[in-house]
Image 1 (cartoon, rainbow, N blue to C red):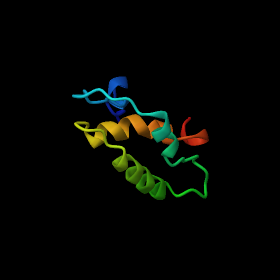
Image 2: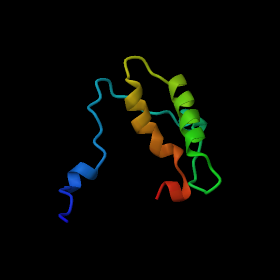
Image 3: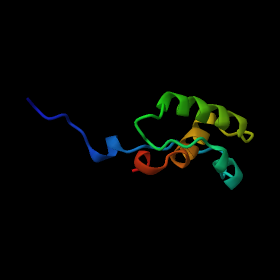
Image 4: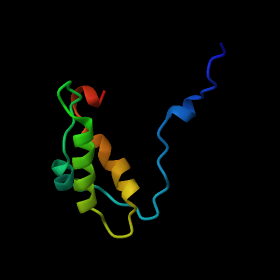
Amino acid sequence: MAAPDFTYESLCIQYPEEDVPFVLKTGLIHLLPKFHGHAGEDPHKHLKEFHIVCSTMKPPDVQEDHIYLKAFPHSLEGVAKD
């Protein structure tokens, strides 16, 4: 059986170009739900809450996907961040 043809680049997250640069404010980062990766945590609940919080912080002329990509790493802690 042949090994899949993967390159390192195909495994990396590629962020889209931003039309309008923006910065996440510290106060908004603190509002994000935290996911620690523990066995009892519900990842679907985390994503639903994350989506709700991000939808309230939409700056003008910024695509929601860009907000999600910038904010998501700030919602992870502990084992989930590793």
